[in-house]
Image (cartoon, rainbow, N blue to C red):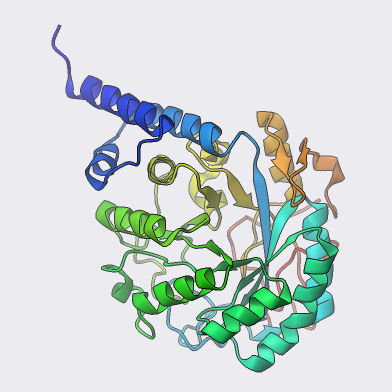
Length: 386
């Protein structure tokens, strides 16, 4: 019997899967072989990625929530971002109060999130901005219900140390793409600037959350570059975002959207390369994966964002709890306690919602606008003029 190329690749995927399960650290050339999977081979790739996930991370899922506390007027020109002052988008600059942060963190914990991140637009925080956030971080750390995280841009050694002292446990600072592709996406700072902040945060004893956005015109070599860079940097959590280009940004209408199976393939290849890391499926999953969202776990994902994103809607927490319930997957809270998903037990109601992944329409004179008719505080900040 003549063995076909497809049979050979199927066998190779299985061989590499077994080797990773046995502790093998995959090489660049081996990862490149996985990138050749197409058609039915993808199901084999997912099968082994799932086995690797269960072996190294477990069946349980983790939730993360974020809040854009200072929005818009950003000095950087990241081509994917609706908050840059260089781009004319639906976002209006605003800043939330510490009370807003507390209320949203309480709801996030109530919905099962183990981590809650404050996101601050801008290249890096000022001392005054750290003063503003400090009461929230200290109180949240003392309460111990949810992990305090920060996405603040570039950090100095002193700022990273101060965040650690405030009780921040994890810093998110995405590489976004490969070193080679980065100048096509951002011009106001460099890839090395991002790497430096990650190293500074790690030296300060902070956990590192760093990943990127896929579908920005990068190729598979770029995707592998970033995966191996993240492995070398020791990222603990790797967010995998899929570009949903927002009108007014330079990438809007410039790149074809990823197909669902290709998006899942990215997750699976990253699981082979990063077997014991938390792969967090974040922005774009609703729009890009569509009916394939529940496959993120079979493809190797182990956590996801619950609630809204920075300036666009996500799915409702009820929908995500229902997805886990249907899959029979438990979730784990910050205290490492395992729970069954409970759509009826999440905070707030969600009787009506716009299409996930779309910008929130302007809503004057409000601080929050949710797809739950303002009953939820895991929401978007002001997006229209007050």
